[in-house]
Each structure stands twice: as structure tokens, then as C-alpha cells.
Image (cartoon, rainbow, N blue to C red):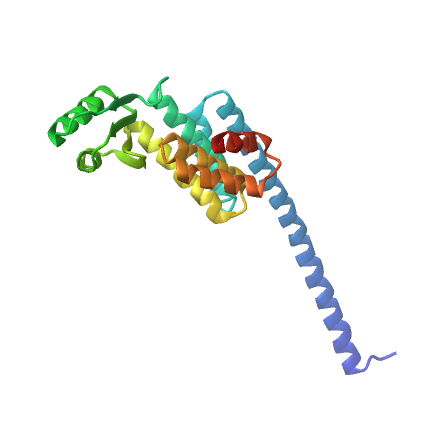
Length: 238
């Protein structure tokens, strides 16, 4: 029996289409395996990073989380986790005491206040310097000098006293990296309650209480099951 030309064309097209479907289905299957393998590798990378962090091997944890970010740059949780490592590393560089240096200034001389700041920086290799004054002009002079000397300054007034928290050295470097990674996590996932909580801890550490509470409240709004944070907020309100 002879096939008519249209029928023959239809048969040929069917064969070609079946071949194409088989080819792409095979490739898709192999691609699926590759994605699964990458996902497993990513999970293992995070597990190893977490283990290093818990063992206080911070530099190793930083390297592993950084590799994980290269694998999944859209993953908010990894940015937050790396921020947490940077935060702890910054505190390690500060040593056992926080703040590293603290003094309430009674002088009305800007030169004396700057001399105190320089002395604190000379004796504090890395950490937090807290200076308090009742005078705006003194606070202005300290803030300007601290920034010129490479410090990161957080200033807050409470009633009649101005407090300047100044981060210096490796503590400044790592704490600012922590802050930036928490912020990046929120850029990627605006509902990430843990990143809000961690930013609250950062700002509380540097003396920006009002801003810290804002982040804590947002973290609790997103995760009202956080009983520890709820208790902390209740105590703060009291």
C-alpha cells in the first residue's frame, strides 16, 4: 500500500518530533540530577560552615559561607549566617571587655577631649571606645577627630548626656561587615526575622538603642513565637 505524500510527510514529522522530545527529556533529566547534586553540595557547605562557627573557627566559617554565597547569591539565610560569623569575629578582636575603653568626660576643653580620645585609641588596638559628655561642642570635636582617625562613630543623646560609641581596628571592620550582610539578607528577603533580630543586636551593641528596638520589634512582629525576644522587649519597656 502506497502512502500518499501528505501522510508520508506527517509520519516523518512525527518521527522527528518524538526524537526531539526524547532528546530534551534526557537532557532535562540529567540537568535535574546536576541541580540536585548542587543543592546537596550547598547544604553540606552550610553544615560545615555552621560546624566551624560552633567550634569558634571563625575564619574557616567565613570561607565556607563565602563559597556558599557564590553558589547561591540569592539566598538571604546564608548572608545572615555569614553576618553572624563576622559579628562574633569582631567581638573576638575586641577582647573580653565591652566596651574596651569607657570614660565620662568632665572637661569643657575640646583639646583635652581629643587628647583623651587619642590616648584611648593608642591603648585600644581593636574594640569599642565609649566617651560621654554633657557638651555638644565636645561631642562634635570627638566625633570629627574619631572619624579622621578611621573610627566608626555612633552618637546618641540620653537626657542631658551625649554618648559616643567609637568602633576601631578589626572590630570595626568585622562588625560593619556583619551589619552590611544582615542588611543584604533583608534586601533579599524582607520577612527574614532573624536578620532583623541580628541588626537589633548590632545597634544595641553600638549604643543606638532606639534603632535597635525598632529592629527587635519588627523581628518579633514577623516571628511572635520568639519568646526570648518578647521577654527582652517587655523588660526594656518596663
